[in-house]
Image 1 (spheres, rainbow, N blue to C red):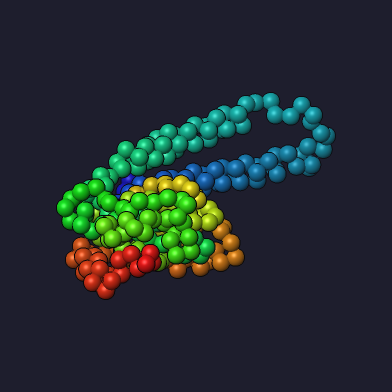
Image 2: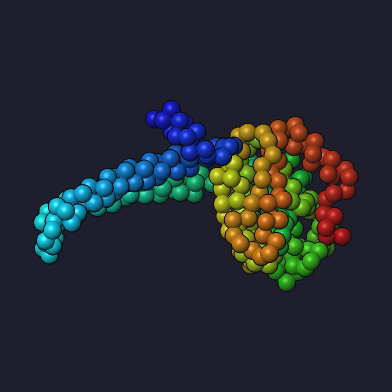
Length: 267
């Protein structure tokens, strides 16, 4: 089965896969495509059959009674059953698994992402809390504090204590460690999509929506916006997800902290 799925992935030209749960997503995509191929062949065959079977030459006199058997009904029922199997045996369990296996924030990389026209703001929690194995600590946030220089609406007075790091269009995470992303938007509805991770989640103003994935391949991957968000929508593809080794991630985080990169946008 796995070899068939992999061969089908290659045949369909699916993009690079770099997340733990992504294979299950691809398997579902492959199964849906095989169903569509079977349906296409079946209905096209029936269409060709109907052209000859019910042509004017073979039926010079119209038959107003129509079909006298229930073959088409049986075929429709079979198709509905197959679609039901795909829904209840694959799609719903896949969704349920993603919900049930939501990672523990204490052992995950947790970030907040605020989308805006036309870029991605990333906020990392206090590194001190991460080093101590505590829950991620973010500064206090209020929607009323959101401004051009404060996309997350944080309490500027609280930043001295929490010392969080903010970046623009640059999201770094360590490989083989769960990532939890809390999404919101500063203006209109956006959609956070990383194709290689097989994740897509809307970012809605006034809401903080979580999504999660576990990257398993080091590399740099494009962050796209899957929701038309204005004339500069294409610019949202400028975001990059960097999946680093733990060593490289620690070096990057240390370099940002040493260079005074922490909370620079809130000064």
